[in-house]
Image (cartoon, rainbow, N blue to C red; front, side, top):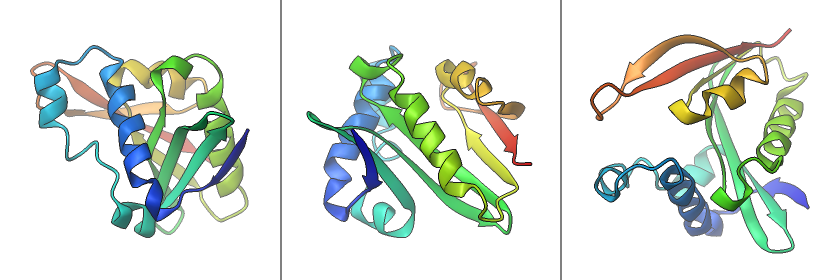
Length: 150
């Protein structure tokens, strides 16, 4: 198992992981189609952001991506694993790699917008909810979360 920088050619596999992982939470096919653009990881996205993939003997099973918002702040934009691996510790491996990667880089704060069903995962890493964003689904909100790096 290894975590490596994603390559531009990984766009399709990362998109598939994103869409399968999002579908895991029981959203309708109609809703997933409406989100298709937001759930697509393009070659340009990989080129312009920091994207790292988790490889096992079976291939790419998860990834995370982030970018710099301003001096001292990064946004964890994506962290997904294939549904069969949700709860297996692979998400933890990705998060630990991310936190290790930004350590000693001057980052003082990490922000993210969480899938509502994944909020508990982020709280395990001491992220705190600082707000919420209304989504296209009535009465569904994305928790806005933050981790202060000491």
